[in-house]
Amino acid sequence: MPPAAMPGVGEEEEQQTKQGGPALEGLVVGSYCHDVLLRGGRVVGETLGGAAAFVSTVLDAASPPGASFSVVSKVGPDFAYASAPAPARHPPLLCPAPTTSFHARFSAAAAHDAPDRQLSRVHACDPIYPDDLPDRRFAYGLAVGVAGEVLPETLDRMVRLCRAVLVDAQALIRVFDAAAGGGGGAAVRHVALEGTPYAPLLQRVAFLKASSEEAPYIGVETARRRCCVIVTEGKEGCRLYWDGGEARVAPFSAVQVDPTGAGDSYLAGFAAGLLWGLSATDAALIGNFFGAAAVSQIGVPTFHPEMLQAVKKILEDKAIQRSSPCINGAMFTFQRSITHDELHASLEEAARLMCEQKQTDPATNNCD
Image 1: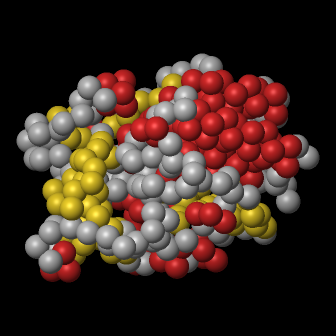
Image 2: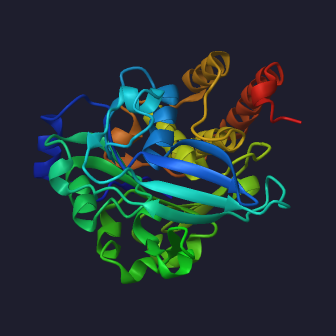
């Protein structure tokens, strides 16, 4: 299959893009949050959350030299993590409303990797409006709302500002049911994408990422005719679907401690792979790698410098040499490269390095 043309950017907009910011500047739109983890009714963790935190952490770690990005996020005066690495590097907008917060409840008897999480939204900060976005052009954008904060009109503004937009399905199909929350906030549930105001924008999006639980709500067979759809499948890796083809991409092993942020980390790793010049299928390996790294820790992950150095060396050696990365060009290539399996094997070595480094620190040893 030939490369796919990038939707949603006309000749006039392309000229304006050339007059915008740095060639590889991205735009991340989504909120920082307060996350509370409960197991058997007992609080076992309180952490920085929100897709913007996970996405910016991975992009900061894995992007190639010369790449940069801006974050548009909102928090309230109660925000507890202003000095954490991600918000400190990419400060949010301050609003009068309280910071968005979620409670993730797990049963006491469930294994760490059991998909028994019950998620509820306890507080919701203000939504992100089109006028909150910077008035300049970007090479790429990531729409990564978690609490309904990325409005349809805001996504429309993003596809006008960004050369390519990657969207997490949870930003489009999540709704919040206070009646079902049982007094513990509004329960998170999903609605069909086709019935939302976001559906007409899909043909102007480059990539739509959904979990296997979300996939039935986005209508993969319909959506793949409009953009490339990525379905993450946890321990099974992920699958890519585009108009005329599909691919399965192998996973990386991990012991799940907290599934929060796995999809966000995947999408940021995938975007970083595109920035390095990889095809979509090869970039999905980078997504799988950072998704696996995220679930092995509670909260926003930290990455050992030696592991990151190894990953960047791999990307420097294996990435397709282009005059400009495909995320900033007019077309995407979907098929795996001839070095796909070699890239996976090299990343497996880096994953083992990360596991060995955790074993030297009992506080973060999740590799047994």
